[in-house]
Amino acid sequence: MSTARDPRDPRSQKCRVAPCHNPTVPASKTAPTAPKTDPAPAAYRRPTALAIFLIVAGAIGLWAAWMLTLDKIALLENANAQLSCNFNVLVGCGKNLKSWQGSLLGFPNPILGLGGWTATIAVGVGLFAAGRFARWYWIAFNVGVVLALALVVFLITQSITVLNVLCPWCMVTWVVTIPTFWAVTLYNLKEGNIPVPARARKLFGTLYGWVPLITIVCYAIVAILAQIQLDWIHRAFV
Image 1 (cartoon, rainbow, N blue to C red):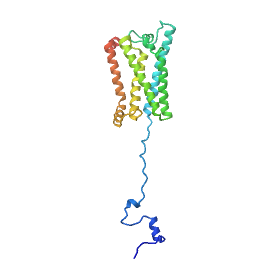
Image 2: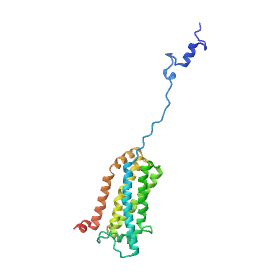
Image 3: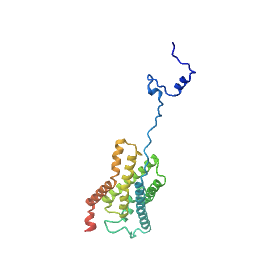
Image 4: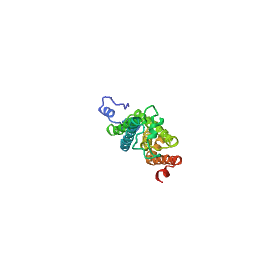
């Protein structure tokens, strides 16, 4: 006798609607499967500390650049003007401003500082307002910071080994440029704005927390080189 059920049988339709309890049918074929979803991206954390640092460093650097600009204008009006930053033979900015190193691109270097530090302040404020920048923006800013550090390293070398003088406002610029370079570069590396392997990003993330110590080490290197070349401790304090 045939055991096939009529398709019009309500019991057969019920089996079609609800999962059949046939032990020979695997559960995986009758139970609905949940759609696959991609893992949620990590939540973005606004770099508030970096934003504050950029604003403060930018303000200090802008002030130093402005003071150097005023001194340069005073020298253009009177080559023998007594500048407020000239303390003695070792510490002063007049010699730097009159040298070719003080106008490396054909115009006074402080003009570069006026523009560069204004941009730094704008980036810091933008982090508070917009919160997040595109990768190309960070890379462009990082390129500017690298160029600023390269200029500062050149001017430090020239001041110590050629001009044999320490410019006060120039040193203020050095003090804020060095940590700005480390903070921005390591942030971009750890966040992946500068493409690096995941393991390297973790390393740079650790180094990012050590920016103050790295900066102090850089200051110490400059101070040691200046001491070897200029004997500034004996000449300034003894």
